[in-house]
Length: 357
Ligand SMILES: [Zn+2]
Ligand SMILES: [Zn+2]
Image (spheres, rainbow, N blue to C red):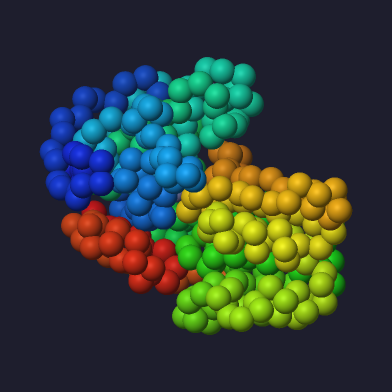
């Protein structure tokens, strides 16, 4: 295959459609590695990246441009593929290795990056699919071989989704109290790709009863199939009361994979005293809560953002060891990326769309 030119699907204006570009690719230098993309998941964040920012509430938008993103922008941060080129100093990999790519790169030099928390780097983020060209392409250039995780015999389509949906779910679940028992309930709000992955992982790794909340009956049905004990429609009358009652008012944790004003307030209402609310979704808006609730309920409210490179390696090892319940995948050709993004925006996707160049 020709390694001197990458064919990338990129948008050239914020909010605009994606078109195919041919970009010259210099030979891999230093620790760099080139991966031939075989699979790339579409994440809900891609809709925000395409729009140019997240809704910060009160009509304000965050800015990917201020965060170093430049047009034309090639998205795609759930990349699975095959190593096709190694820089002279790249180590630990062989041509032909099947890998997934950790995309949440930091500056690579600061103390936060040095302790393996690139995703929380306070300096200059270099995320693949935002600041650096991502996986909506036939080839992707990765700055260092350490960001590649070999997947052995795992399905590359499924493993690709670990890099965001997987570690986001894994990272959020790890924030919950590890001593939960079978009497405890954990509520998962939002059963799209990430929420569904969390349900599947939680049912494989936690003793607590998992409760799914989603307005879409097809997603509730799928959640029950992937390990949720109960599933509720948040739009039903008196939904919070019904959920609380069904859980014997013993909800130890709520993970909000939507992150909207309505879901975050539902989360705070549902959780028991001393419970934990973890906000993961980036739908947007503002979080409002009566201040006395913090004290009266002794609440712990935290956020969770993707996961570390170590989390990704651990998740791959877990998937190799135990058979995780499988979230539905919707495989589509890369050339249909615009339609796929529209379907995702309209809520017409169950599980995860994975593109194939
Ligand atoms: Zn993502
Ligand atoms: Zn850094």
